[in-house]
Length: 242
Image (cartoon, helix red, strand yellow):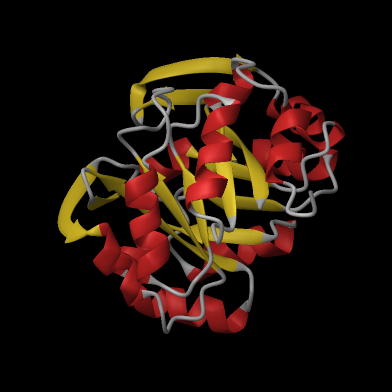
């Protein structure tokens, strides 16, 4: 099971939001590429990046910062936020991003999701952001009436490599992950699932792994920045060889 430390980018800085609210952000590092190096040096095998401004604007905004991160570290990076065209997907992949996370585009433009998955096999993820069980889009601003499970099932025949499931109500709150909702997504599809939102302590990682052993990975942000647990301890907990 893979631990994905999160680097959320707002105006070129590494921040964390509270319940997805852009107005409630805390800056944790003014130089995200240096934060990426810290994660790499701690033994992390992947990074999860989000262009928060891009998610709102619908186009890449923090591209220079992402480029700096890609130049700084040699571990694979998955990136989401404002990626809503084939041209943008091609731009990021040619820039060195290993996996593209399509959120709004995956919901609103399934043809794009399928085309990208076919063109770039194994490199496209579908992001499902949910509040109270309903899918959200456009930087978590718009909440649909579509159950997240139904959205997940739509992706079964698209060829996506993985689903990134985020519980918005838990994101940045340090209240613990929504294990029941996450398990519901995992049980609904055969696609690997990465969980995000609410991890606050080492025990949360243990609980997720125990309750959902076939979970592909876990994204954590604020708990890492607040040093609620040691990264090496977290990596050891999720190491399937142990």
